[in-house]
Image (tube, rainbow, N blue to C red; front, side):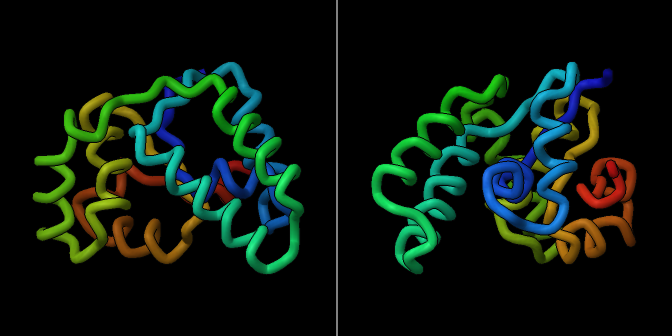
Length: 140
């Protein structure tokens, strides 16, 4: 399989009962080399924190989930290596620098970025970045 960049929405979907959770899990255990900027860890930890705050998971479940996330076979790129490109993309597209870190990494690696954020994918798919992004729901 071809390498891909996965964003935090894909990783989070694999661990929680969300739409396309099955597709996210399948992607994370596939043979495809998986890439992400180091931002993926704090973003997913924030999702875990929110779920804990809403009483959906216990503290020990939160700890276990974070451990599982940290054990995923992700090839991590330090954010500072794509930060300038991400800022440029954010200014050009009106998307957040956070989201554009993933897109910038996909461009750098010449691969697609898969996201569970349909609004993000739709916004970017209408322009010159269409070939860089894919929606998780389309991988099913």
